[in-house]
Image (cartoon, rainbow, N blue to C red; front, side):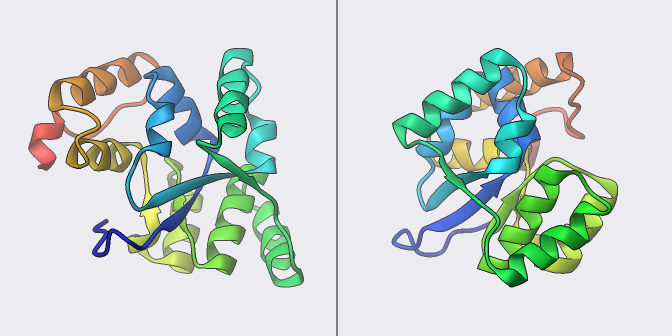
Length: 171
């Protein structure tokens, strides 16, 4: 994803797996520092974060204004949410319904059906995942390659495997 104009702020609706992955690596706070992006978390995603330390960190970042909350609203958005929630989880459904309705980006590491739905509804240019967020952080000078690779290694201990050896391979 390339941001062409620094004055434009794109909103990214964020799924639970992104919050959890960035919590595992202690990088969740970086979402509030990425230039040109504003991250929001739907109510349904907040309810999915049940591990106490993750829930508390999320709560603190919301209180600090690093992350914002949002709700599924409006007839069209609610109809899309209802349709999606018959085949996806509530958090994923909320993220996709909101992103589709409002023209926002979506951040998620979900695969299979979610990814097919997201590509069909949003296209690939409006999708972001954990490796993509780390790349944006590297490019913005918020992380160096060694820190990003250490985070990658840490996530592998939490069963999140990236398909490359080093972020250096992606730059």
